[in-house]
Length: 221
Image (cartoon, rainbow, N blue to C red; front, side, top):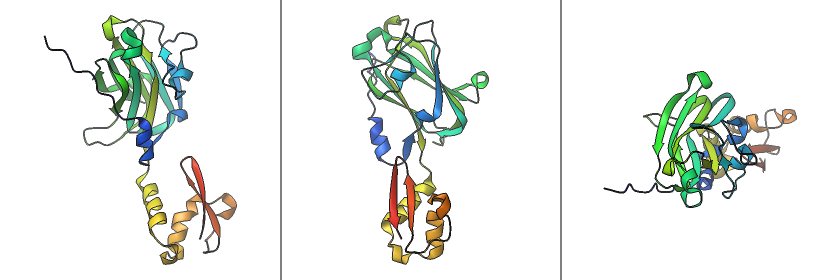
């Protein structure tokens, strides 16, 4: 009998963030669980600590529900599982579903996991690699290793693609001398980023704050 190959670990999601092409949006969602052991709930699932975890406390399937307040573009789901530490609590079969609400969820991915120890990257894209737009994501643990009853999941992260237009703004800022930019171009670049009392046709001597993800940089133009 052939032994199935172990599920290889994916890259640390922080490497994805450093590319500047995606950003993590889990904090924008409302999270709920089908069950949890006291002290092992959503907070532990989202604390950026690989030593903590969610532990279910009920019958299968075990569910993680992630609901956004508006329709949101999602590209990648990252789940951290650790068979070495969790053994029979480790998921072996996971279903990922999306939809507007609980009543119209549709499965877009089903994963068979073999002793995973690390990050599992789940693409939330269609056959043309186009990201999904959804109000809700549900992660369902359908089975655990060794027929375990309850499950452990250590971290979950959700990524949305950074808008291409924003990337082009940044490229233009860093690779084009300001002296070569006309006033119309400067206004197009900075108009949407200025503070309310500064939103006017800019001159080359005015200062506008450019707001980038997690960072505010001031440019003199």
